[in-house]
Amino acid sequence: MDALIKSLRPGKAPDLKPSEVKSPDVAPETRPAELDPAEFLAAAVRADLPRPSRAEAEQAVHVLLSYIGENPGREGLLDTPRRVVEAFDELYQGYHQCPAEVLDRTFGETAGYDDFVLVRDIEFTSQCEHHMMPFYGRAHIAYTPVERVVGLSKLARLTDIFARRLQTQEHLTAQIAAAIDEVLKPRGVAVLIEAEHTCMSVRGVAKHGAMTFTSRFTGMFRDNPAEQQRFLSLVRGPSR
Image 1: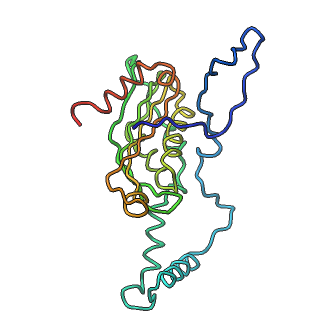
Image 2 (image 1 turned 45 degrees about the vertical axis):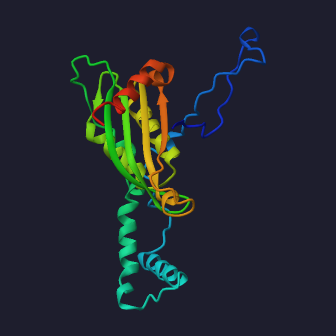
Image 3 (image 1 turned 90 degrees about the horizontal axis):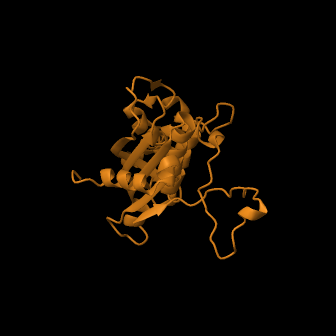
């Protein structure tokens, strides 16, 4: 199933003239709240904030090994704290990368191209912020440029930056769309993510193969159902 992202932050209701007020039995139009660019466009780790040392991080892994009932002093585990911290440096490198810089370089030679650009099947792996267990899948990203386009690989790099942080799939979807919308200022952005969560497939309910779908639409994709459908048709085309 497809799940549209709910508002992450309540938006302020617009001031309406008396003639514009709808009757109580008519549901008001709702749109997703915008993310604050200051919260996601810069690197998440600030150099001026204190962080634990590598030795302290390795000691924390040592404690966890003892907690589960292991003997951290046995031969096979002697280097495990170091390896785990090195793996963390790789898995969570997105905290040190700047999404805005990835989208900063654009190209203007488009010969008047005015349709949307779609990059499909961008594979990613992220970590669930609730259990610190992997979730993985594919992202499909489209945007309709205004005069200038961004290199195609940059959409994949943007996905990796946000994915290599502790995440929920809903937030990941919203961040990718918001970053493209904020930096490139396109006529619209569409993001669809499909992923399997190991916190659901290998623990808890243990339902292997269950897929979660999330989507986010802005601009022309949000306002024009026909464009949404065209995007979804290309994502789920016969070549899949």
